[in-house]
Length: 76
Image (cartoon, rainbow, N blue to C red; front, side, top):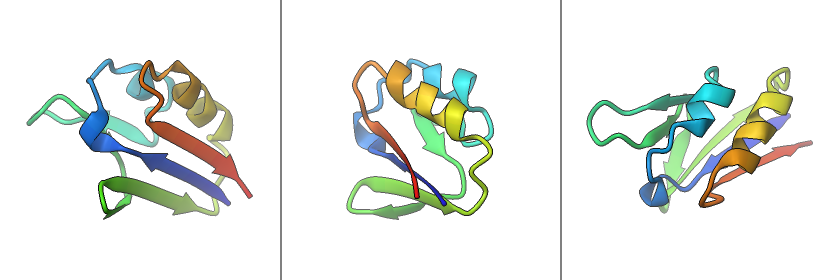
């Protein structure tokens, strides 16, 4: 199980996440912030839980590249 969490309101729109993990992230044309695809929002945190963990490495790279550290990736 792959769990990705994005704290979207703090996003600065650097685009690293979309470059490193385009399967899970897109940039919003409306406000220029990252969007975690197929996620559920709760109290400002967007979370994606998927049994398909084939993109774990790219998601982890996106998490490490984020300059403000708003992406968390775990594998269970």
